[in-house]
Structures are given as C-alpha cells and as structure tokens.
Image (cartoon, rainbow, N blue to C red; front, side, top):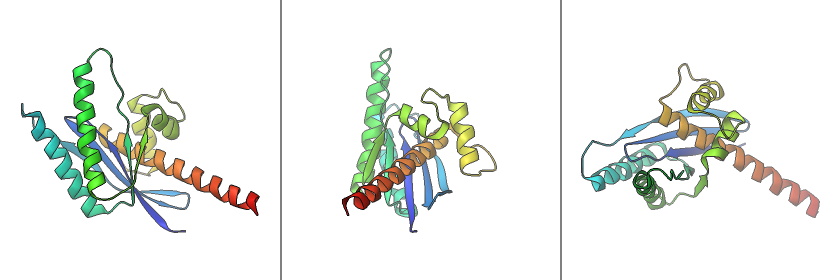
Length: 173
C-alpha cells in the first residue's frame, strides 16, 4: 500500500498549528508538527503574510499530497475575533491552493470525534490522544496537536471513502 502524506492546519491569527503525518495502511506516522507564531505587530496584514509565507515553506519542505484545514468556529460573543480567524484561515488556504494541493475541511466537532471519540472533547483530551495515536514521547503544543488531529481526521475520512468506493465497485460487478 502506498504512503500518503497528509498535512493538517489549525489556523489562528496569532498561532497557526501545522501537523504532517504519513498514512501507511492502518499506521499513522508523525513526520513534523509545530506552530507558526506571528509577531505582536499591530499590522494585521503582516500576520497574514507570515502565515502564508511560513506555510508555503513548510509545504515545500515536507511535500504533503493532501491538506486538511479546520473550519472556523464562530463565537457570537466576539465577532471581531471570528473575522480575524477567518482571515488567518484564508491566508492558510491560499498557501495550499498556490501549492496546487487538494484541500478538505472539517468542523472542530468532527475532528474531536475522529480522534477522541467525543465531539465535545476538550483540548487536553485531544492532546493526550494525539500523543498516544502517534506514539510521541511527549505531548506536542496545543495548536500543533490540533493540527495533527485535523490530519488524522482526514486520514480516517479518506480511508472510509476509499473502502466505500471499493465496496461500490464490488457490488457493481
């Protein structure tokens, strides 16, 4: 079975997490993960530029074949934060599109469900499961763990779609 390299992105205007895993059959192997921290510049467009440029470099170095991005969760209490998060997500999406990679998007609940088994899981639970699932010696930073969770969610979804297509093909014979 071929190795598939997946990249997950957890966008944020101050910290954008990224995680890269290889899927080899049923095995998930950690390749790289980390956080892109933007400066505390008052110039928000500069933060967006940093996200775009750093993700572009990470994509060039690690060469993922597919990318998954977490959808924006809108907080009604602070619409300004939701708008900034959406813009950071847009910068991340542009980096992926410019690299010519296919993008999948997942709601936060779906990501938590795929990794923890509970769509209402908290960040500590997600972080712990990422450490276990990827056999990491220590828990990654929260934003990197969230990005790895997005990649794992995509890996699960991808494998399920593949099995369904195989089943449909068998029924059609």
